[in-house]
Length: 168
Image (cartoon, rainbow, N blue to C red; front, side, top):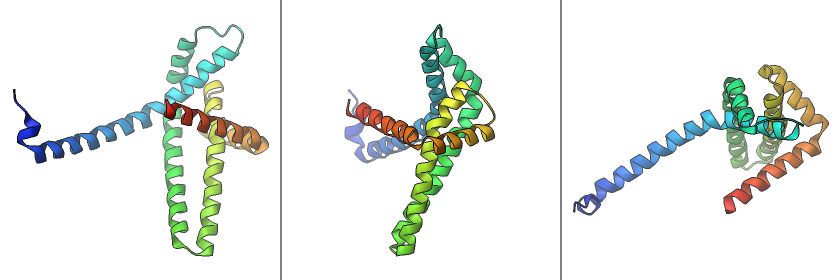
């Protein structure tokens, strides 16, 4: 029996690390491309469950994915870009160590929290009322400004669900 790892441990370690980096990069892009559309499909299926006579939830899921794939992908990439820039700004200003830098980090943290609160409304709106991204984001912003406790409750529920799923 041929034991490649025993004969070439350094080469095997390098190949293992390289394959891990490649696979994690591929999985990252798969999640970036597929996760937003899947999230919209999930909200479309939940909407079918909540409406009387909603029909087959699986068909509503795939219909929601097909109908909004491009906008969901663009919105997911936009969220990724905005939250990455805001996270970098928070880290940069906080690491300055000055009072002004920490105050700026708190301001950018508040902006990041606002982006997340708008996302609580933007994904269901995209699933249930497909529309161009500009009016969609504007409506989600107005809803999150009018109902901040609901947005924070949705955010807390999402965090609690993620923590629960991580503990399984």
